[in-house]
Image (tube, rainbow, N blue to C red):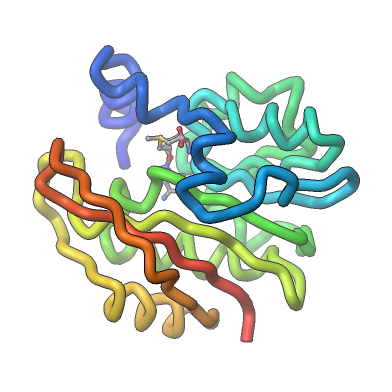
Length: 189
Ligand SMILES: C[S@@+](CC[C@H](N)C(=O)[O-])C[C@H]1O[C@@H](n2cnc3c(N)ncnc32)[C@H](O)[C@@H]1O
């Protein structure tokens, strides 16, 4: 995603509701209990938007490591993030050994190569037994029609990137984009 695309996505009024999701709502969509983030946990916030999730993680006494594809996204979490890491730098970063990770409304922006880079990178930083909960849209929502993705293909992509993936049965309709999305949990085998 270029800087221009990102800034466009983040300044168009109609996009605001999706770039600053309410953390409680995100947990609900991901079928996670409200107390899933506990004091002292190390948590990856993957694809920040306005940084709401990072602040929520910090408020719970947990430690947010913030990951995004462009540096501008870090402006909102300068006082919140334990560390800010660009997706492309994940492979050269000391292992974080995170307990948990959350990724919401992000991978619809990633073509297949970007998705592989992101998955490979985040899997390096989740500890053994740790889980990343990830929302996956079946269609590119940027209007560029670069891909269609389904549960089977996503599972294969995670495998190719060195992880395991469990697709939860839940599915949400996304009529605005003529798409659907689902929730997966990914981990290291
Ligand atoms: C629509 S916002 C979602 C923000 C937040 N997670 C939420 O639910 O409101 C998408 C975010 O994902 C980031 N993003 C897009 N592609 C990414 C990638 N390959 N790696 C990490 N972050 C990415 C964007 O820069 C942006 O901050």
